[in-house]
Length: 555
Image: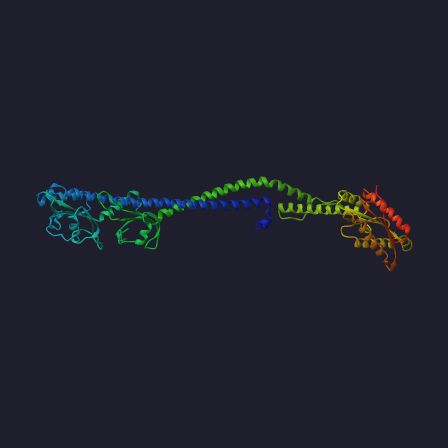
């Protein structure tokens, strides 16, 4: 059980708790990150769908405008071809025909017929009857052929047409010539379509979809002028440059009221005999519906990511429990071993107290490594003791056999030869007899130091026992005799210097040396040593401090 004081110290938690908490946090963060990515992509998809729907709304409005204008153009063209207008019909009959046409569409503000000079001879409600419109574009263009005029403010009809206070009366004109039977110009039929018709058309586009609360539709002329404002009193607008940027598409656009909104633009195109005015229909989504849909997607993504994260965390905790169980058992066993009382004077286990299972196992592994290291050092020390002379530290006879195996291959392949120097101290026994074995041991130690100093780094110095020493010198084939003589002369000369022991500073010994070369004087190291020993015997027979090279031939 974890102690309450350790709750704020995660490093002191048990391994299972650490792994579980760490994996849960990681999985939850990963799930939330994936959820955010999913929410962002879903929000982009919602925005794309909203933009496409908004563009479709603008296109519907633009298509309806083109269709309605094409229908009004067709009505005027057909009316201009009626016999009632082309013959000698009375003005009253002509007015009756005009009134019947006006009754089909309330948006017809005025329909009139002029004579060839531009004087109105028949009109709905007798408005402008007897007045001349010869100077107006509707007559000037209408007598030339079928003609449609863009949105403009009323001039002659301004005082007759109903309008809202503060708002100008606007019309769209359609006119066509009336030809007599002989083809001459008999007059012009002119139609003024109230621009309020466009507002009614806009409502019919928005209302069936239930989009009026969040979407707005407005119409702009080719020069960027607002023809149909999004709401009464003009309201927010777009600059002409923004319309040119959008063209036929949708994007987030900053409006004149400072609010960025999803905006789509569609152009009213020519249809049938209607040549088109290049009106731009602008649809604006003020963002409420899109923002709500986006927020719903984000909330759904967050809920899903949290749910998936919790599920993955539970699975992760279950897997961690399976994986950590052996580690916990091992840590429990180690704690039990550490708590076991040691026998008095006997070996025992002392593991330091750790914070968690991993540290407990790490401490046990570290202790095991230290134990193995100590044992390895002990083995190496025993090996050194077995191969070294305990008094002088030189190699002993045991290592001599191993050295013979190491050098045998190179010697057999003629890659090198070995000079064998057998040394025996002169006048050593009197020092032992006169000053004791301690003095003799000190002399042997000093002899060993001098030999190591005189020998090269690649040479080997042995103490064979008592006052007998051996030096193995390795060299290239043919150099053995010269090397052995040079080193032997230096050893003999150096051994003549006095040695000391406590207050005794003039202890003198000498040495005799016999030499042989392996393989020149023996096929094996043992045989070469035997011949070097024979040469040593000859040197001692000749007197103290002598050196002799074996002169016989091997084999």
